[in-house]
Image (cartoon, rainbow, N blue to C red):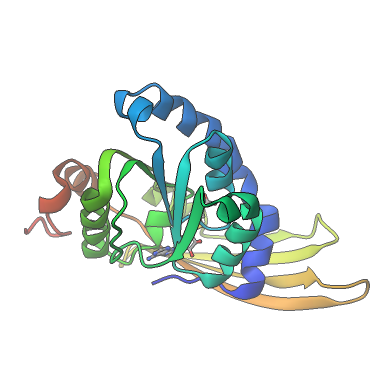
Length: 229
Ligand SMILES: C[S@@+](CC[C@H](N)C(=O)[O-])C[C@H]1O[C@@H](n2cnc3c(N)ncnc32)[C@H](O)[C@@H]1O
């Protein structure tokens, strides 16, 4: 289970919003082109993080529920979408993508920026699909990093390009467990002369594509990692 901490969530909110913002128009264009998209304006943003995709979709007039495990990420999401939260068009809930249940039904469920890689194994992924299946009347659109992509994070990256942050990202990929660990540490400016230190370890699972495709198609009856049901 992956929860993003307080300081790291602030870094994420400032540094990594761009991905979700670039994705917004693509998701909107896709969903608006579908039959269910013309009839059902309810969207669930699973693992919504700081809510940047949710805000884009709220601006297009959709009702959006964002769900995330991290209270700190959710605090930014609620701030970023404050006017929509106040009007009731947007709602952000703390819950686990593998266990949640909601009374509301959605025409579209989205999960972006490798969020599902945070699930620890195939069983957790299957539980997540079951939960999505239980609330979704249309499409589940998600992205996933591949083993090849995660292998590329097997290095050290230093980012000192911005006066507000200093980041060191140490990535290790364990081929035995198909798991990538990124240890991101650094400093964030909190005042004129002050920086606060933070450290976050992010775990990502590389799901085998063949099994994953079966799981995606099969939904509720997906096999586990060894192919057993
Ligand atoms: C890489 S961020 C992506 C955030 C957002 N979707 C975006 O595109 O910017 C991954 C998010 O997944 C959340 N997360 C990880 N495991 C989760 C789980 N089991 N249930 C719900 N949220 C989870 C983290 O708290 C984090 O906000």
